Image (tube, one colour):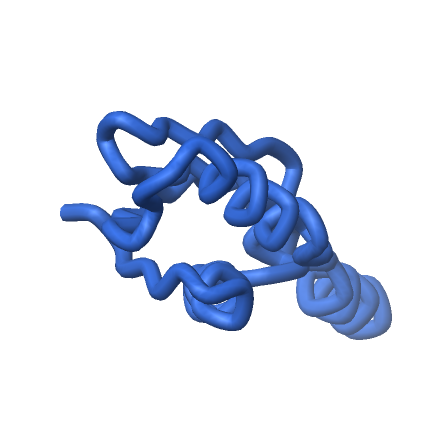
Length: 91
């Protein structure tokens, strides 16, 4: 019985934590021309774990769907900043 309980305890501990798909809206106020959304979309699409990007030029925002096991919001905002378009999480 003790071996069975030990095996069960190890099985519970060994179960991987699954990553979740998350969506975040980033405010990108620096998008001022028709080419800006293309650059922002390209920068975000290169980030590992990004599944989908929807750029809304008129609202100056980017809606990003990503795997939170592969990337995070800080990496997304760094990607836009590195492309010349600083962003922040829209509240």
